[in-house]
Every structure is written in structure tokens, then in C-alpha cells.
Amino acid sequence: MASTTAAAQAQPGGVPPATAEYDEVLGRLSSLITQKVRAHSGNRGNQWDLMAHYVKILELEQPIARMKVIHVAGTKGKGSTCTFTESILRSCGFHTGLFTSPHLMDIRERFRLDGVNISEEKFLKYFWWCWNKLKEKTDDDIPMPAYFRFLALLAFKIFSAEQVDVAVLEVGLGGKFDATNVVKEPVVCGISSLGYDHMEILGNTLGEIAGEKAGIFKKGVPAYTAPQPEEAMTGLKQRASELGISLQIVDPLEPHHLKDQHLGLHGEHQYINAGLAVALASSWLEKQGHKDRIPLNRTDPLPDHFIRGLASASLQGRAQIVPDSQVNSEEKDKDCSLVFYLDGAHSPESMEICAKWFSHATKDDRRLTSSVEQSQTSSSQKILLFNCMSVRDPMRLLPRLLDASTQNGVHFDLALFVPNQSQYNKLGSNTSAPAEPEQIDLSWQLSLQTVWEKLLQDKGSSDI
Image (tube, rainbow, N blue to C red; front, side, top):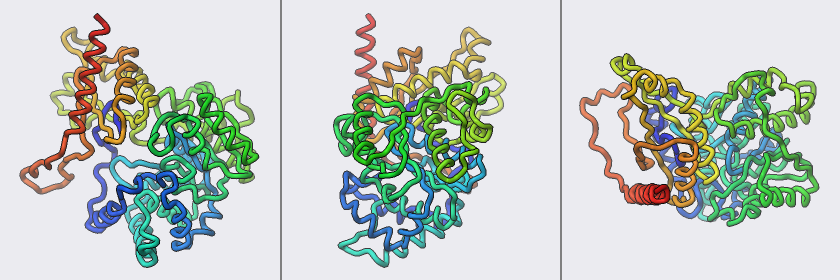
């Protein structure tokens, strides 16, 4: 994940559970991460047919068939779209399940029941149920499922056992060969905004990427999409035509639809995701016999239960603003504050959107402007904390981030390129002295720094 305004892993609610059993479970899950199969998904069909065996071992064929699923793929905004959709239907009074990825602090973030992370007790119960059955039945021919596949299977077990009314599923990667695509008859499918990402797996053109994402389309199942680039839209329409299904293009929501309420997820781009979510939730309600609860048209304000759901939606790491709670009283007296602006942008298009959001958010944030107004010698500093994995091309990400930031009046005083590993003292620790810091290979981060400094140098030369 590239966190373009802060890579600090801050989360309301504190650190993850730290019981011995929970740590053991996390270790078992880590053992499923392999180099041969991408941790997120099926790597263009690499042994994807094994998913059918796993589903059979866990006796999930019928539970999955009975599940009322909303299935969402896309490059950007699919997690936000799923979150909005679940929140709308929960506001309508339904018992909801939401499966998203990745998580920031605690793996239980991926499994939400009625808008809340699954409890540690339930997570452990369902984990061991799945783990033990799979361990008993797998062998050299049918090995244990890879990391994301196991998590998808676990989600199906959780949602079926908890008897949710609706399961909202975010695709991990792609669509056609994604672990979540074992759902044969979802109620409705959606495609969020498409762009260039995971090209080493999904293809080098938007048409190829769209074809992979459209792999979640099913015959007889309505499909909706956010507005797309022409090449991507052509790929989606071609797949829909092959299946003989309707593909409806959904316009973004407009502020008047919300009766002066704000979306729970910030950023102008979220109106695109919210519009798609309204269409998906409306389609699900109509197909489940609740036509009286859906919007009458696309011009009037939304029904109150839709607005409540959109306004209360919450998803960490998506245009999230987190004030530092550790500011001391002396700093507070000076009206100073430390604020983290978190976003999981990891594609060139998302970088640009994130930079625009950061610009607007900091201009509107009184915590930053008040100190400037009070003192001519005081000004806020903008520090970029950036993290991305080595599989990504920094020359596709950093130039878009820098250009969009500059165009929107943002100039970073400092840029820090940070690794995935983090160190912190657990709450309630009795340790008198901090442990020795772990030695971490920073060669990738130094490469990112070099790219950034070269971009700054080139931009400075062009401005002369």
C-alpha cells in the first residue's frame, strides 16, 4: 500500500489483540503466504480450480449458493463502494456482512458484521474450524490454500454461519480468477473505476484489465459500472454482451442528493463510489422484494435511510484524517497540532486523486491555518510519508503525485520513504527500556528517495 500523506498506521481503538492464541493464528496465516501465488488473488488462474475443492472440503457449496451476494471489482474505489453499499443496507435494517482488503492494523478489519469488525472470539472459532478441516483433507495434490484464498473461504464461513441477510464482497485482485469468484449467482455485480494496476498479472492495456475485472459478471445477473475510459468501457460491454446481460453506467452522486449531509468517506472522488453503491443497494433491494425502499428517480434527494448509510460509512485508510492524540498540553496551548492524512492510493490515477484531496483537505483544516493566521513567523509543515512495495514502479507513481501536488499548491517540506515494518510499545507494557530496533533492509526506500530527489531536481530546472 502506498500511503501518500502518511504511512503511520494509526487506528482508533488501539493495537490489535495480543493473546497467545491470536498470535498463533496470525502465524498460521502467515505460513500461507507464498512466492508462487500472489497473496491477494489467483495469479491469472494459477491452480484457481482448487477453490472448488476447498469449498467442497468446507461444505460451503450450498451456503454460498444461498448467500445474497453483492460482488464488486475494480481498480480504484471498490473497497469504498462496498463500504457505502453495506452501510446503506445496514441503515435499511438488514443484517450485513462485509469482506474487504487489505487491513491496516488488525486482520479482523477484513470481516465486518453489521458494520463492526468480527469479535476476536468469533474470529478464532471460525478460523480453527476452517483450518482444521483443510489441514485434514489437503495433501501434496491439493495443498493448503494460499493466504487470500483462505481469507475468502473464511469470509464465506463467517457470513453463512452468522446468517447475514446480505454479503458484500470486494474482489482481491482482478475478478475472473479471484478467490471470491466462486460465487456463481450473486444478486448484483459492480465495477468501480478502472485504471492501470497489477499489470504484471492483469494485462498491459485497459481493455485487458477490464476483461479480467468483468470476469465477475454472471449470466442473468445485473451489472453496474462507474464511468470508465473508453477502452475499459468497451471491454466491459463486450463481456456483458457475451453473457446477454445489461450493463448500466451510473453517474456520480451530487451533493443535493444528500440533503446537505456529507459522505462518511472524504474526497470528491467518493461521489463516484457513492453513486455506484446507491445503484447496487437499490438493485439488491428490488430483487429481494423491497422496491418500496429504493429511490424513485435519479434527480430527487435520496431516501433518508440511504443518506444515513452514506453519511455514516467508515473505512480506514481511505482519505482518512487522524489527529495525533499524543500532543502535549504545552503544544496545545500554542495551537499546534500533528495531523495524519492517510490514503491507500497505489495507482497513478489514485495518486493524482489523493494529491487533490490532500490539497483541499489541508486548505479547509483550521488546525493548520489557525497557527499561520495568528503568527507571521509560524507556518505548517507538510511532510510526505510514502510506503509502497517493490513490485510497483515508482516512475508511474511518484511523478503523478508530485505533479498533482504542485498543480494544487502543495509543496512538501520533507519526504520520508518508509518500510512496511513498524515498531511500537504495546499498551500496558511493563518494559522499562525499549527493545533494540530491528535491522531492516532500506535499499528499496533509498531507491524511492533517489527517484523523488531526481524528480524535484528536474522540476526545479524546468521552472528556471
